[in-house]
Length: 353
Ligand code: GYE
Image 1 (cartoon, helix red, strand yellow):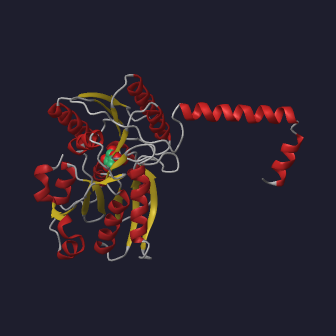
Image 2 (cartoon, protein in one colour):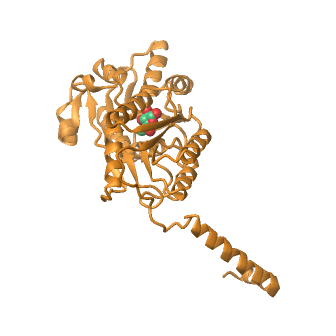
Image 3 (cartoon, helix red, strand yellow):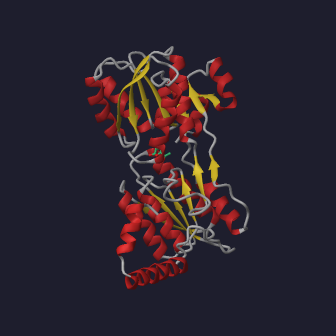
């Protein structure tokens, strides 16, 4: 105890001290009874023939989100299970109350795509206290606030740092280690935006002439991306490379470049993440130099994990996705570097979303 704390304590008379000990003891007992103990076991799932599954979506304003929702709905229909679906319409606060309403409806299990890392950690913990197992789908929460394997079963999704790193490596190669970069970041405070930024920065850090001249959030949205890019490009006309955290913002940047009379893929190169049909077409057209996959088709994997949980099987705390790398013609060095992961956008297009 620090000296200051000791002094404070010594001014408390013995009656108050006893009262303090009693109240904190009571709080501890009720906290533990409510299941608030950080060390209590993860909620279990009873074996049943049919489950009520909650899926808390973040928003529905882009093809990635629509494909993810479709995958969940299709899989639920295939299994014959009930799906309680909510759409937070781009608000972390609404998503917290969506999870609360799922708890009130006593769903069996919650699949949550947390819009932002910090605010949704609260919802994860509330579900645990209500004894409902949670899987985090596609985005994660801040590990200092809630932990996989302790507060929720697992994170199911891509390695966003790796996605950013691959973009950075391909860009450094294509640009010969020389670029003035505009970075369009995803939703501020979301795990993919944080980690995609980190991975890319890491990859270009060994190239002193690969410089990010401007970086701002376009909220993972096409029109916001277009507007943000337009402003950044006006103040940085020297930029010759765009690193965008998702395809929708990339499409926005392409629209802004073309409106400014520039040729994407010639005047300004672009690197992107997701693998939407629009982006795959842009890669084939030579407008985008690389697109790293981030699949939204989580339904089959998520529902299989629910069955595993009910069977009492061991589930890793991080259930990773394997992301492929799409380029126009897969130069040899890409195949050497990424092996089986590298494929042409044309070959990928039939499964694009
Ligand atoms: O890249 C983006 C979406 O969380 C991984 O969110 C996901 C990202 C995806 O809106 O397009």
